[in-house]
Length: 441
Image (cartoon, rainbow, N blue to C red; front, side, top):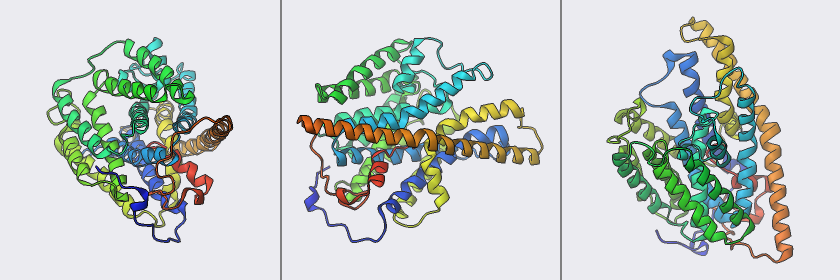
């Protein structure tokens, strides 16, 4: 895929739409994804008769998340051109709430025991410290944490690609990972590397490598080691290797869509990727779940793709404020809803055979509790920590500039295909929001 300089791109047409409005479609997609995942976990316990089986709500939701993440994360890194600031924002964006949910689950383990899939040894600590849970075959203390593994692999790989100037090959990478998902599904039934040692080794590499990235010591080498480690773990120690590889293909497809939108790449790699991901589980050795049957899997992928395309078609238009708001609190919704559902059912008892009015009433109450708690954690955990992360990032940047430290060169910083504004014209609030955009938040 050829690169096109910013000067060669047509100038953005004047628009009266605010930058925040142009970002609303991404938040709306996050809101849809989060609500779909909540529904997937809520319906079997509260309203089992309403759970759809012609597609999978949860997989649909996370595919929408991953497309959004692939669309925004690499281009955000390219725009700002500062891997240190990127990783500082990632830590303050993801870890505070993540650690708070872990603390909650452990604190209430006397009441609702921690999942059996979580090892009772140091490997669980190591895997949770890196978020590389699923790629080292360790269960998360909250069921939904498994998807964060693939977010982290993507961040590590994108950082390495950015520093080696390979980040503009997203279309090729999406097809490579999609083809790999088909092959891995044919030959691997599960993790090749088993036991606790992958969690310990990946944790050590993660800590040392990120220290190098943040401190600037052998930064490119450290980033490349992290990227290789992440992909190796993805293929050899994942709980479901073909699925993790397919997820990476979907995320790079999201990046390829953004490059096509800006006129710096074609759309055909996305079509090839979609076809390969659609067939990836059909002959996989480990494909016994109902949601990877051909009709269900392909329908789920098609719906996720159509949802993302619909969001793009509506960008710049006024969207329902409630849906955009759900997008803002989507990371909280995603992480807190499953533990809260467990606690709710522990109090209410089994509702699967209760009368329909009781099921409906309990469903409404559970949703109200989940949304209320998510709004509170967003307000009092996420937002303050994001603000702190921005302050830390600015102080680090100012300190390095005063000390004469040379930053990574910006990539076409004067133009931005997401906002359509020059960087200096974008309000800080909006710029920070896009810079922190991710599939789960």
